[in-house]
Length: 390
Length: 139
Image 1 (cartoon, helix red, strand yellow):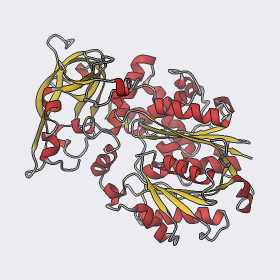
Image 2 (image 1 turned 45 degrees about the horizontal axis):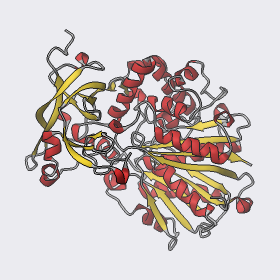
Image 3 (image 1 turned 90 degrees about the vertical axis):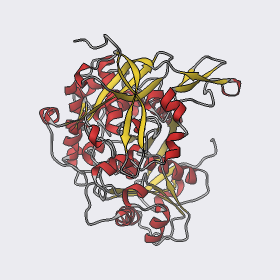
Image 4 (image 1 turned 120 degrees about the horizontal axis):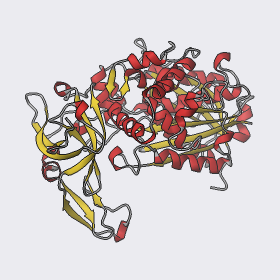
């Protein structure tokens, strides 16, 4: 699209991710949105459209029609409110819808939120709700779980590329280290490789500390055309690209289970649109629902060759201060994973990084360009977003 | 897992009980589960039914220790991707062996087993699982 408008993020907000016993779905959505609205210095009524990423309000809290609920309790009626569902990529896909809305010239101020309330049901029920993101007739039917699917990827990857258990553990250790400096992270404890290796097996070879938690949380971004962004903020962050790709719903149908082709495709499109390459990225937020997923993401986004991501972790290059800081908020692993909110939370983190306003221990110095990768299911949906401080 | 109705199982019996998939007569690619459109040939594709042999090899495997609703009594159990001799891969349980017996490339074949019991009002669900073929176990 040659005549599209440049889109800027003019306000961001997020709740802490974690177990919010005192807050329901609407409370979380409201808290994140108000933070974004206050940041942008608006009253709220200027918002013309809202998108809400939400995977399964129905199964987690029995609530559907979540976008209308959000519009109502934000006091935004009668603006159009649209719920977007793409499993764990619901937030990323919602962002892309808002981006299209502004880029097309249809609206001048759009709110994109993501929200999930996961801890009101017991673990088994939540696991079953998440299983809905896989093929119910051909994967879940036989007793597969999400840790199980990613365990299959990890097992095969270890076989093909010689990845060790200890290398997997290093991903979790790094993300907990970053998370320890993030007051909004679900877990703020540091981990050692030994802690990870001693943790309970969930789906061999994956252990508890290879898996992200189920969190409650919400996040929100406000989008406006770049030419009007300075009405709201002194530091607009421009969306250089927001691309999405699809792959087979089932893991068993993939070309290669050690590659997320949807990530590769979305990344290639994003870098091409942004006229950038992986070496230009100063900070990345990737979808580490399991430790193996972060390694695959690093490779599929083009930061290194297939089979070699673990080397970056052996060298410590993905820590703040390294060549490619990854998941500076703790990622999904320590930062938390409120499924429908995660794709937006990643963008909130990038915006705060590029503005230079996160805690100094995890601030990437002079960061100008950031990338987020948000994945649905075992890789059937991927969204890649590149943002830049201008 | 949500309670599934009897028709939701019954309408799939050819696939679940008899391993009936499909094949594209134009490019020869086999599909399990059956597809009605060949992603390669699109309008030129000629989809026909194909009965799978049920023979294959382990491509990757895991042990489910935190089962979803309805599978609690079976955990821990082995889940694997099995590459069928005809080409496609399937996800299924592997039985009649221990988790430590399973290895990548282990030859396996289908067997007909109970998959799951729902509550007392629900139905008992049967279908295929895989087991090592004779001589596949290394000990």
